Image 1 (spheres, protein in one colour):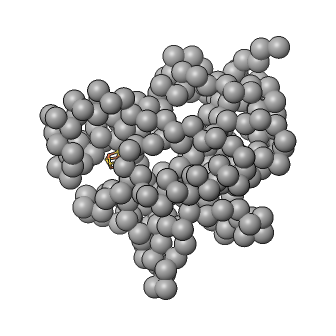
Image 2 (cartoon, helix red, strand yellow):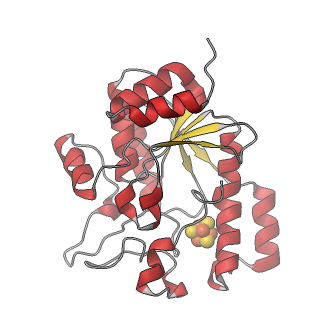
Length: 248
Ligand code: SF4
């Protein structure tokens, strides 16, 4: 039976409380047309863990910008081994990267906000758009408490900017950072070492590209570690996004 993405499904998912039930329902119906897309951060790892408990095949994808931290590549291999899965690494188009680098240089993101967004578009947004052509359901680990900008998120919504309607689902929308950490600890879920605080409390709040992502210190905004050279006022730091979740 073919299932379709429509308002009734969107509403059904929005009303389903338990993340595990949401995952079971979506992977059972949509199979490989549904995928968890994660950079391997805590929320994404919780989703992988819950999906694995469902005993159903499930698809996991990550956007490999070709600039991820070495620790992240190693970590993804560890996750594959732990859960017996293969994480699809979705890469940018080599020709698009070549054209961008030839025209603007390897480190164009230092030049301006516009060029940073252009780089993110080529290395993240375009690959995501191509991935979405293979999906009916895009499952993310986005949570409201990650930034002010993410307060407006809904548990499920239909994206119409894609070539066909895609249901975007955020099963952990309401989970707090403490709840996520508690679940990770209780279930011995693998954690990328970059996310662990060092002796002075510095840690990576998010896992992006090298250079563009830096650790934050206690008290800083959760998005402060991204593109630090842009020197956004503290009040605007929460709006720093790569465009992945706002331009698609
Ligand atoms: S985070 Fe930096 S290197 Fe990565 S895609 Fe965006 S601008 Fe480019």
